[in-house]
Length: 437
Image 1 (cartoon, rainbow, N blue to C red):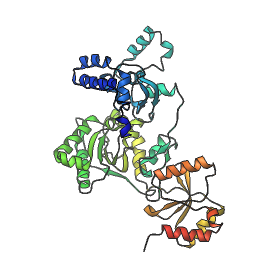
Image 2 (cartoon, one colour; image 1 turned 90 degrees about the horizontal axis):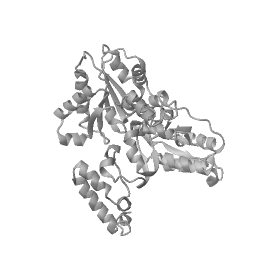
Image 3 (cartoon, one colour; image 1 turned 180 degrees about the vertical axis):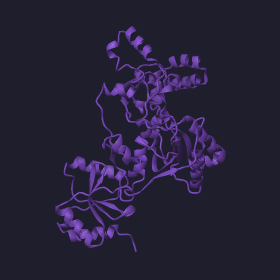
Image 4 (cartoon, helix red, strand yellow; image 1 turned 90 degrees about the vertical axis):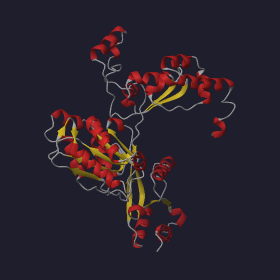
């Protein structure tokens, strides 16, 4: 790939002139930059630099105004992008892939309804009002109405306890939890820290700021590899948290901890191993503040940024509604999934493994798949595949890929290899998976 990227076929004379012109344009002022970009050879430029990654707000200041200059444009987090910001990127595409989650945060528009209606009427587009309503219809909404939709249901980020509430409440159990494994199925990884005597002054709950700072200090001795995020729904609370963290930790320490802070909106599309969420509410707050935190899309993003552990810092004594339901969920221990009965060779092998003293769970669910036998406990558990998947070879291979990507150690123990002798098969498998000593 490195050789091809530097090949003479890509770096022709025209390509070198185009990239040199791009460098000159980027050093110029904004108006002059756009003039210089308009004069670039877009075809030669993308031949030399075929992959571009950036934000939709940068497109007009970084790319020539040439329709269809890219074979493919991928618009990610599209439910968070309004049509006006998406248009310059999509105009430069021959084909587009639009990805988004309608259950997460949407864009915020400050365009007045009367201006939208007047513009549509002036252009004779009244009958397309719902689709072209730039206040309410995101780029994702428009795409779902114009092209086939593929549902990406596999969840690979968080341990089950962190995602199960959202999977049921916001996605109707359509998410497939590929992260489930005996090492984490009973892991209680949501903590609720209730602070007392809190008040909100100018939008800041100082008691929660202090509590969140103490939590970060405790993590500092053994920080998670994937970083720490401190998040709040409210801008004033997020700013107070950031100021407290900057006062407590220098730049080197912040980098060592992988420490970030901000509002929920700032963390759309982001994640961290450990998340500290400060709700910033007290029971006596105006109803509008309570409604803001309990907005389903915002709350869904708030509680799904963590990969390994979430601590909710709250001053609420009597939480209600969505927030109350979540805190009640967090207070209950996780429940292990049900196994599935098995027959034939799989059942015979399971019985022999049990006789050897190995814990066996048949039909262990991982996302939409079932592991024929899950053998062992906690992190030592392995998956045993006893036959080709009942839906055929393609499903079998897809299951193997999914489980391997999720970190499962798999062993094939087909009856044909052992002449239908489950005793020999069990002895061989046990010798391979039992820890030494």
